[in-house]
Image 1 (cartoon, rainbow, N blue to C red):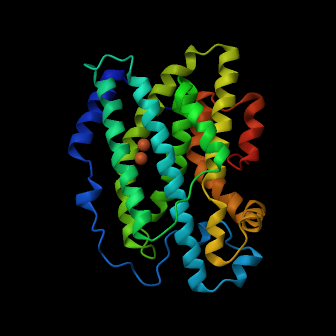
Image 2: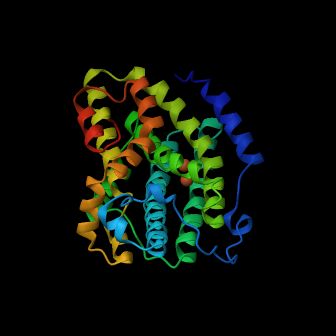
Length: 296
Ligand SMILES: [Fe+2]
Ligand SMILES: [Fe+2]
């Protein structure tokens, strides 16, 4: 388990690390570089239909095409959540003393996320992909979530979103058989997200002991529901149109696919272990994590 340092010490360290090691996607990525022929956009065994009957019928080109649409969907949903996060952080810092390193780091993180959103959006545009996103109902419910959410479940929900995508991105950043542009985007994101994860994890460890029994159950429930919504939204069913498969049929096959269920579990492994350790997973809402395939 994590030993939370003094808030100010952590804030100061994260600010100095940000000053030394931050990226500007406009400058640090060559957007005009040609795409690599025959390279996948997502490791093929992480594609939602991998191993299904539909998958067996696809040509190698169609498999790569689907990997492109799925990474586009993950990036679209990721950047949508980053917009939510910007509002959460802006509301969080509203009451904080701007002279503190803790507040200044929250503001710095807003800056990071702004650049990430533009980076993901440019990648989606570069690949010629449609605008994917979470289901309409999730999009609308998030409007309320980002306006009212706060405290332990806010940090825990943010960690679920950041850490499940981080797991996927880390696994790809050094993979030779993945598109170089994707690898570069992942590398930039992994470096900057490591600081966000540190900030949110420490804050969560500080907040957990302040929750009474009823509040703990409420924050557990909110985190489980938001975690479920995020992981379940990552693959927009419209991606299946790219290989001529009806969206509802593709989604049904993915949800039943043991490989896809294992991928969800693998993506959630690190964050669910942490949330279990700090007590944010437990009680009645544990079954929601299981239904989301984030716990076995
Ligand atoms: Fe980000
Ligand atoms: Fe982040």
